[in-house]
Image (cartoon, rainbow, N blue to C red; front, top):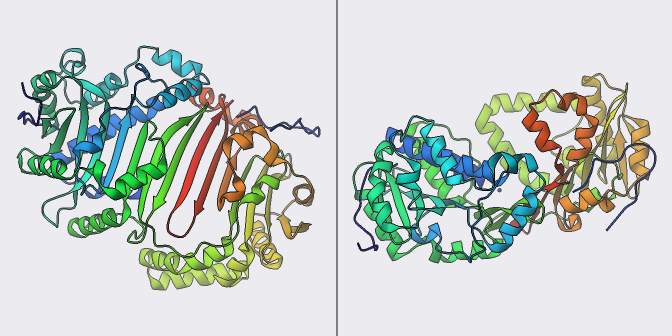
Length: 527
């Protein structure tokens, strides 16, 4: 049987906890909104709902599997990819690869060694495809389909979901499911039974089955024809974005925010629904990958073609100079300028949400309560270096919390003092720190933050955040340290939760922008 566009058309779808005590240890060396909104805005119709339910079940199980176990095959080179059978008009795309590059497989094994319980539970022979299929069956679908006989013989290790504009301009975008095929003949024999309960149709191509919602062939024919003429894989912007991202990893997502935002707005207006998405006409394109990096898990992203404001001066390098026993911190470079630039859009968004009258009343209350002018004083307080640091709980005294920055100390004192008063706390204290100030409710902790350093030398920090001095935003969470300090509270959590936390070290987040694009990374490190 010929494998080229075969005519089967059928219904379808790092380190231990932060040390305690006085002795210092030895030291050593965005876009997702659019994807979600597209699913929400295009959830009309029973057939499309079934398609989205299938997509959600499969991606959900695979996402869990990335933290559990991969049934790895031989360390082979990447083969055909789902984007090769989606049209270049696709505005958003997600793919899952259970057979990634050799380096990803090796790093995944290193990561999974940190979670022996999960690996033991799933076992070396676990098949995430089967687990995903069984998840769909638990929803009451495909009850008469046998995975071993009807699915396993042809289903490959890759899948993708693309959101493709409908033929009619007023219908938004429709989800298109792409499943890797290892045996064309077997797929053509078994797909009708698999697809019957999913309210759509599929067509088997050379390496993939392409599935759309609905029972007529019109949309499926168009998707296949458009993809044959101009596939997403060959689109210049798509290739550029994936090239800038680097390794695809095990899950990759891409969205053209401008085009997706237009479709979301159009569909929301027609259906009367309210999808809370920030205006994205100037947001460019975002590509993300969930991938392994040694014993760590990373979500890395890159933005291209954005038309944003000028990049504020300053960086988040101050986070590395905090006390070595810091449990959590957020540092923003150029925060004052950034807030000033973002204020018009933020103001417009709030007004659109609550109305002009309620916005004006709320702003007046904030200014009166804090004793400051918004946005002028806020920008002055943020300055070019603004960091919030948490050092844990002090028995009998509350949280060890401080603000470090080079902004207007008087405004900072007003804000901290007012919020402390509302919470029943004491007056704010101010300590000099280099060229800036430390504002804290605890005089002892304020003094500690202004004189104690070394966080950047801690192994857990270095594993979680690479090059904080080149980032504009940096977030650090010492998971192991927090778990140690709050172990009594954690003890009330579910055993599975505590088991996972026991093997984690830290979380690091960084983001950098150059005005027309940028990079971001979220790293989860293990002990």
